[in-house]
Structure formats: structure tokens, C-alpha cells
Length: 76
Image (cartoon, rainbow, N blue to C red; front, side, top):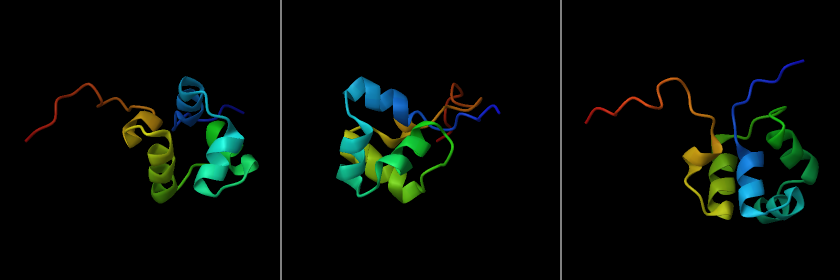
């Protein structure tokens, strides 16, 4: 079964050299839950995604897979 990739949590964890265990402890989630987020088997809520971004000290948008409109400039 092909999972749709919606988040990049695993990629950012690797870039930051942070383990599933460390992230889980930092945001109050279990390793299994973090593993499911990383494999896109389960998606975190927006609140949890924000907690992950804060723990990793990254913009929350780095944790998401860009969609087809990512390259378009924003209107002001």
C-alpha cells in the first residue's frame, strides 16, 4: 500500500539529528506515535505539529510536504 506523504517530520528529524524517543519525550508523545507520524501512517493535529516545530526550532511549514501551489507568489 502506497502511503501519501503529507509531512516531512522524519526528514527534519534526520537533519536535526533527533531521535523518535527524544521528540516524543519533548512533546509528550510515545515513540510509536512519533513513528506513525514519520511514516505518514497517522497525521499529527495542528497543535501537535506546532509542538513538533517548536521542539525542533523550525518553521512549521518545513514539516509539511509542499503542494502544487508552493511555487506561486502570494497575493498581498
